[in-house]
Length: 215
Image 1 (cartoon, rainbow, N blue to C red):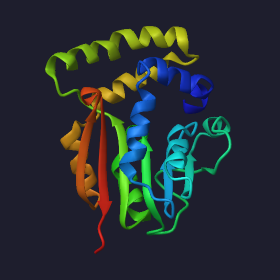
Image 2: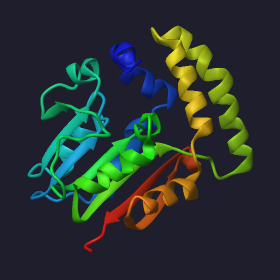
Image 3: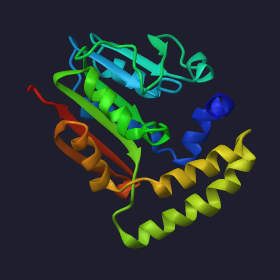
Image 4: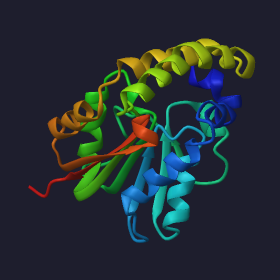
């Protein structure tokens, strides 16, 4: 599916998010507090948008984007990119300082296993940042958003993309995704500490952050 949507993936993201996707990714990059001497891995990097934001944030850091879709990686442009499965990262234990995943955790066949894998590769004190669709916190806004996902977005997808079914899947997967406290519990169960989240755009998106313990 991701290979099929790759040609117009970035355009569709911008249109369907009403231009907010760049703001969300930049917020995720800054939440990492990536330093110039650190190593960061952007999992499910797609066409590399967040990967590039991390590189701009810390030009001296080693930033690697990883994705299992070859068509996405073909469109990522220059940089360090590796074809990889998020559930079996080609990385040693405790080998990176930062792991990011933006709008990808929800698409893993086993998100909880993905979180355990991210925890495995983080060094003690390393940070995980998950940027993912979530649940609007204002009830009235929540209903408007639900109607947008289930009615308006599928209509737009039929006109804008070559694979409208992929965006019907998007709406279904968002509706089935846990809320902010629910995802925070998943991070804690994966062994991450100091777990917290910040709502973006009224909770349409949430940034979750956790730290790998030193024990």
